[in-house]
Image (cartoon, rainbow, N blue to C red; front, side):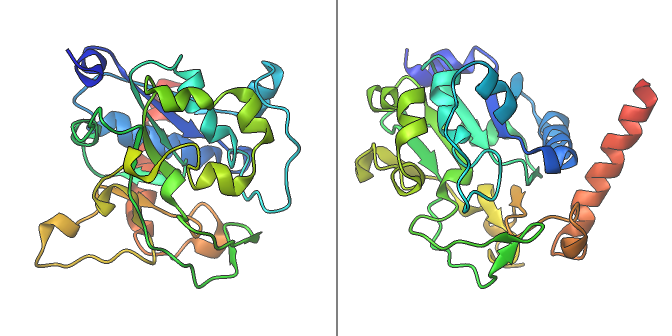
Length: 244
């Protein structure tokens, strides 16, 4: 039995980057995953305040960190006890397909799997005015399938995550290139960059990433696919209100 076979019998752990400015984005992302999932999942927000309190995170915030989870994301294998497969995803995602389809892509020969974007943003700012940075492998780390039990991922201790550079972490430099698997771009479909071919269903997004800024920010309320996010938000709010 492989690591992925064992993992399939357990809830899939999905760690979502959480930012206090984007609580509604987290809730809508979570709602979209749960609504469509045909498998058992456990959704866990990575809140910087929590990992600081627990002694797992102590580095000072740098000027180029546009979110509270810029570096905490790399604690995913540690938080999963270095067991099975787990997903990390930024909170500014909207899922349009069953997360089981993503889990079914896992291949135990890889330490991680992600969409290997060739992406250079045109904007100089994003979200609510944060600086838009350009670097190799940009957005690769925004949605990652981690083979948490892979020996190489044991390098991702709190000590390393708190001390290494952004370049080392976001470019996955604790791994060799052949240990990084590729998944279709539709699982990290970059709003404003990725393209749909109406004649090719394989290009239709399965998870939209509002990487420039989503409609929960005033400046981005009319971005591409804003209507889909707002529809999901309204569904979430209606259900939340019924529960009160």
